[in-house]
Length: 592
Image (cartoon, rainbow, N blue to C red; front, side):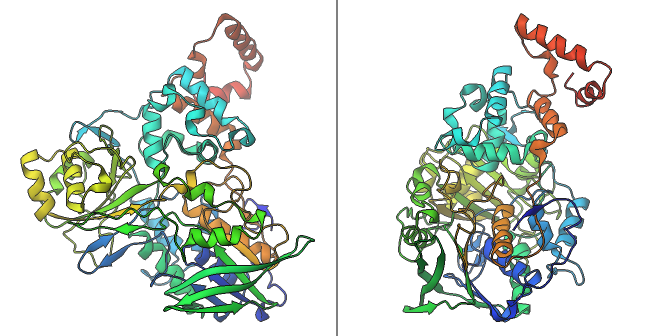
């Protein structure tokens, strides 16, 4: 497997790997990573589709990319996905996945047309004082000292960031700014999370720094992630003969590890309908294993029901499987680094279903858009900066479900500090029913206090979900804690998902999961085509200059506060570049 860039290989079709017709593939899980691996195995590996088997413990595919209606309870979206134009692997695959909405076009086509005609843009990113615009006005509010902290951090080698926390590198010059409010609420970072992962995000998305205040860089699917992404992939696989084995847990995987470093997966322990069995893997059998899950132990509450908090790892779960696998070889990673401290990565995802038009005027006052228009509404999350739960909420294009009544709106919200007390409901978010969480949200969007209980009771149905490991991807880590997609010496297996290591990309994104699927297939089957490299904006001087000026709210770098020695050196540099293309470049990007 190798990386490529440009369109020479992007449009090429690889030759069929020798002996592929005699091989079979087994997949643990049906999240984005596993489905992606299956699709690439059929499209580029040209393996017969009926040679693919997917084991899934739930009754449906999708993993963390969910979106379901529970009869008697309501619509549930545990989270949402924000996409970027430079998700190279994602778009490489979706150009080949037929739409289930429109005949004759791909998922990429319909996605592209939708976001061109209705581009994303937030008209109110932050509120305060019960729904009033906080007037951050697109400003980051970072001082020169804070900018220097960020620049130094950006250039710090990864090795110096291992097992370090964000607070090891930043103080109030960064953490008390609009920049950090935008950043942490958009990406769901705790201050105590991984400094290394934050740097990954900065380098990966440096070309979008100027779009953070308005979220203009984001793109969204038409419907929820399950119906817009998972279902087309599942149909593509099933149309090619792939077999899905639902309600089937994978309890363990056994490996043969030789002294010379060669490693083979030899058997899989399964449980279906309470019956255990063992699948022995032969010479032509390949295994793709999804490790870990940020929706592990999710607990669904209800309008009048509090979610359970379930932080203990249990048999049959994805983290339990990973720790059984990891016990067999050091190269298989260290799952305990990610699941051992749920208090540092838990949060709640909540779906509010409006039942009539009484709440909609308060939404429209903030978003300045009609939530029933079928177009962009919030344009990404709106954060109530003075919320005790640090609550953020979003409304994507409506309807979000094919089955959703046309006059109803689905709101998704989350609280990044669920252990703190609310401002209207004076208790932690984790102790609240759906109705109480809705009341807190209504308070923060400006509903008069004497109307809040009535609207939360009769004009909305609210379903909360507690996720003990929601941002466990961001726990402090070091090299080796996440295993390689294909560990050294592995002959017939690969690891998939957000808890494995692929260079330069960022976890908690659709691209990361899908990239691991592509890399796994291309490596194990020696596909003669390059995997598109991660977009290199961190190496593009134009993006770096634009980001540097944007962080200073448009103030030229030449206006920074320097001592007399620094001013002298700057003058020397400027004299050297005078009347050159370098000077023209710096002026074009308002550095000078």
